[in-house]
Length: 406
Image (cartoon, rainbow, N blue to C red; front, side, top):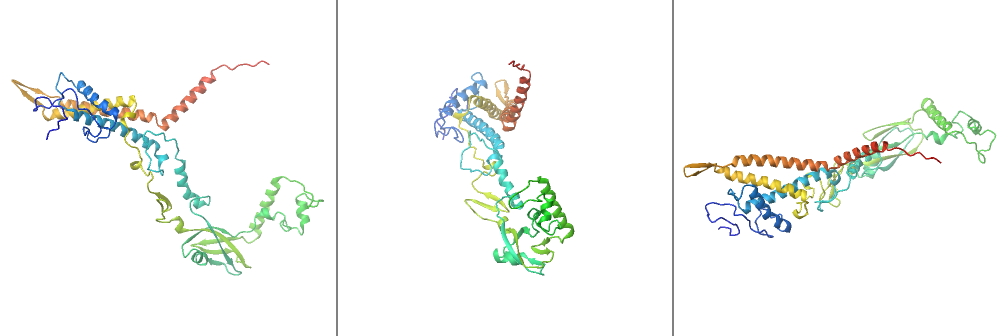
């Protein structure tokens, strides 16, 4: 059944552009996808653009083998292509700042003023866990009671199986060392002396009561004294050390008395947890995986740009791309019948030439648009500001300085 909304010429055997198209209304179905049929600006511009393109193609001197639906489909595609190119650039420009944020927002024609620092911090949290300076897994504290004469201890059996329900633990730090030298500066035996008087003499406290009067000494003296104590412990005493392999701990030297030894650890399951859900998120191999958030290029919520909100520069690009699409469609139609017989001769149509011309114009327009978009990107703008700052400094250096006479 024929569509009565289309204006055909009187000769039904020949479909030609009649000079005007049907009015576009919301839900009219005159465009293939209907993206912009409810847009008042699109309703006004599409018929005018069709008339303009037909005129550019030679109407009314030559027949244009297209109807309004052909022109409207090309116009819709041109607007959609412009929207897609702009959105593609915005995704590339902002993906670092948008990853991990919610998808329940329309970012079309919005200003994304953010940095990728939060995403980098989330990635760095895993490294913070390993070095004990943060992260998303807590270090826990445990202890064992070392006994005199016993050198080896299985921390997994003694602590992990008991306190962590047989979950594997990873020891991060063992507290088995002599007291620091800074805590032993006032040790009466730290310098082989027999009493405090030796240390007081060495520190310049001779003749004073250390409880009531003090003599300040340079800080480097304290540092040198601490270094001397530590070298003394290293050379003359048995080294306090340990060896741990597969959570099997061996203490050096062999304990000669009972004491409680503390350590820090993490539960391996906490770091490598699988399927721990929390508000749509879960951990997979220590990585936080979230649903309903921007993950990659495919789900960044940039929608079709409303035609009425596009500025004049964008609309001019759309018109040129629309004309190239019209040439492509008209070339395909004419190339189907390359020659038309007429009395005593035949007419050769220019379908192939139109299609070649359209392909070149489309490529040039896409290249031009992408170059303009790249020039407005973050990197290009930062380089431009840097160049402006350098030029401004060079200009200011040539301004004569005033001489003040008091």
